[in-house]
Image (tube, rainbow over all chains, first blue to last red; front, side):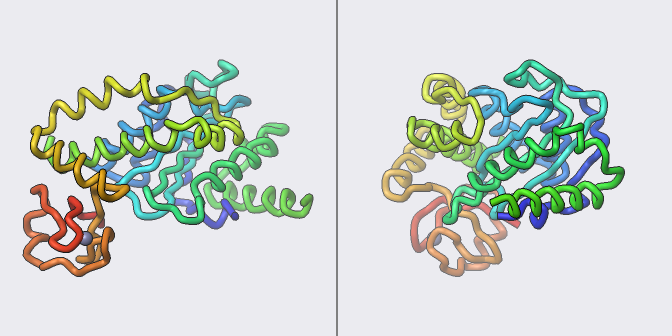
Length: 155
Length: 113
Ligand SMILES: [Zn+2]
């Protein structure tokens, strides 16, 4: 499983405008879908959040859901220098958001593997606030690729 | 909201209820690091509210197909029903705002670009 290969610069936004959970989710879904499709996915993601915030602590959030409206795994990334109110489990603001939407059918369970990988990567990204360093989406993806190499080498 | 859109919303919600409804399945997310409550009670009201907006015969049809297949709705991609992988008659695509069923497998279909 390789996250950097699933990321594209067009879906990495290093200066999110929104400061609140719901509007951040909208901003990120907007990079993947538009119109009514976006509305449906946003509503599903918010229902998922109601079961427990996907703000897993240390400034990272990973909103996720399955939806009929995608036919492969779709990911968008957003960063906010000012922080987002995300109702995170440690009650701290969120600075980096990975949004993951998976199709209903997913034989290799890429969905869970991807979520696990993002959590694993996040532990490295929060060290010395590494994730704030990249100045462009391309650099951000390069950073992810570099950390993934380190993680894989450790195994 | 169009009926097909309501059905898609309901189906997405049912996916969520199914995926996180059993303690074992929930555990696979919890072990990654997510805190998740049992969705059954929490989302029951949301499901009811959504289901009420759908005409009864259509809702019954949805539930009936769900008994038979795991998923009641199948996407159409490139003219193919992804429930049973048959090519659909092209005139069906001109009525994509309506609720239509695949003539082969009977699943309710929606167009996915
Ligand atoms: Zn079919």
